[in-house]
Length: 530
Image (cartoon, rainbow, N blue to C red):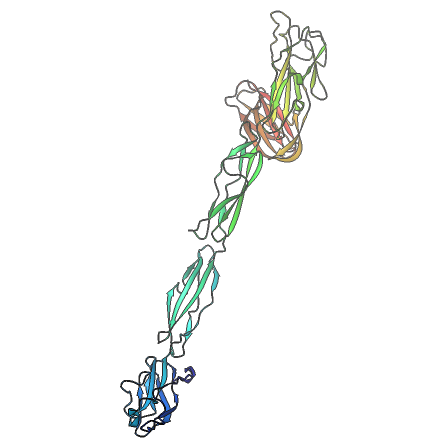
């Protein structure tokens, strides 16, 4: 018997089956039991000695029973104060004195009980603590090693450990929580359950890929453009997980983006809460020039008396509009004024300064004269206005001096013979909607911008020599302000000469405008296709 595992309990249950025999008719000397020993908790197949201490009466013997009420067949063959039993189950044993006068007495005979209990204590288990590990990079699992549970028992030298749930040590544990469950059992079937968790943490953010920056021109008539783009895509180390892709800044695809630069940002978040973001820019360029609407007024001067007549351009302008910039007629200036006859031709009075433009470029003074041998004189007043993004709107008004009031009374415009330049147009150059440096739109009458030939038929060459380092665009516009083609976009260095050749294709025979626009300056030149 394992003394350190015994419960030091002795259960003495003495049932007085008969009253004390004093005064009975037989004067019987009954057995007396003063103590018992051997009761307690034992392991399977352990041998236990049960003992009673007492005195027998005349002619009596001790009998032991495998029950608690001293009835039935005894389990001993001879009278003894102790017996040895093998523990296979929990039993209450009992003992009493029998024989002699005891058998004739109905009351006062003691029956003592001694309880033998088969071990029911489960094993003590050393169960691993809960574990947290990070997933392998680019994988949705972790290889986890751990010690198996161990147990000790009060009876069994060895206990049986059996896994009933979870994965084996060294397996690939998926992201998330896995419950490990084990049964630890002693030889008597007493069981202890060991349970712990292994949590694999996903700490790797998804990878999100945005489209490249987008650059578009404005949609006609609005200060922006409807822009469509591909929604960014994301991948995650846990391939089967759903990654949430959310617009966190900017505008959705197919919305109207304003002129300028809009930064669009998307964020990808995986089920573990890891997130990453990417951004791209949507640049909308305002390439639509303002529109100057002139009144349908015929300005014909007679007689050719060599006196000035004035043209106030505001009297000839119906309106000016722009898709982005709020403009008024005050923003329009005289760019230049040309005449289809020379300043001092034959038979026109031998005068100078036929064209005088006011300092504010709002009025021009024109001489009422024409060549005597000509077909009448036509003055062309070229108007210009620029919006905040450097787009130039053009228009023209005309004044004429007839040759006479007869059959030559309707002058014929033979094209510019000489030109007087008007004002420079000051503008704030705003690149992508952000205020930039001041630029100047200059009618180039220097070697800064030249074209050859002019007029042209099939192609022409552009020669440009910038005054400073700059990022420029070279564009060809119709005289009504419609952009035909971008010929160049890029960086130019100061004082270096650049040359581009443009094949005209199917251009109509009319006047065109070549514009070189940069952050530091803007120059343009009129060219004619014939």
